[in-house]
Amino acid sequence: MLAALLIIFWEAAFNGVRHFLGAQLDLLPPLMVYAALTARFPTVAALSLFGGLWFDSLSSNPLGITVLPLLLIGVIIFASREFIVRDQLFAQLVIGLAASGALPVMVLLILLTTGREPLVGWGTLWQISIMSIGGAIATPVFFEFFGFLHRAFGYKKSNETSFRPDRQIARGRS
Image (cartoon, rainbow, N blue to C red; front, side, top):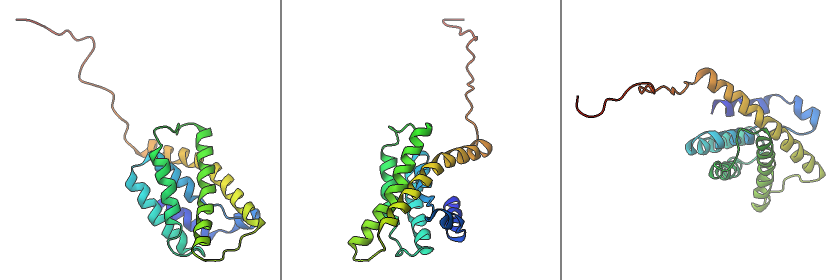
C-alpha cells in the first residue's frame, strides 16, 4: 500500500515525464500485476480499492471510477497465476503491457457509458500506447525491486531436517 501511495504521489507531483512524452505514465497497473502474481487476494482487493481511490482523488477522474477496472485486472491475473511463468522477463513485459493498456481503455469505456464526455481523439491513442509501453517496462523493474527487498528483509526457508541420511535405523528387538 505504501508503494501505491508513493507511486500515485509521484505521478501527481512530477510532471516532467508528462511534458516530455505527452502522456503520464501510470504505474498502478504494473504494481497490480506484481501484487496479483505474488500476493494473496485480500492484497489485490485492497490495492484496487485504495489505489483506485487515491488515483482518482488526485486526477480529474470521478472518484471511484478506477477501482472496478483495477480490480478486474487483478482478479483476471490472480485467477490465472498458476499458468503464468511469473519469473520470465517476456511474460512480465506482456502482462504489464496488457494491464497498462487495458486500464485506461476500461476507464474510458466506463466514462462513455455513464454519459460523461471525455476528450477523445487521436492523442488518446498516443497516450494509451505510451502508458502501455511504460507499464510494460515498469513491470519487470517492480519484480526486481520487490524481489530485492524480499531477499534483503525476508526470512529464508530452512531446508534442514533433523533426519541425517547417514544415520542407522535399528530395527527389531534390541
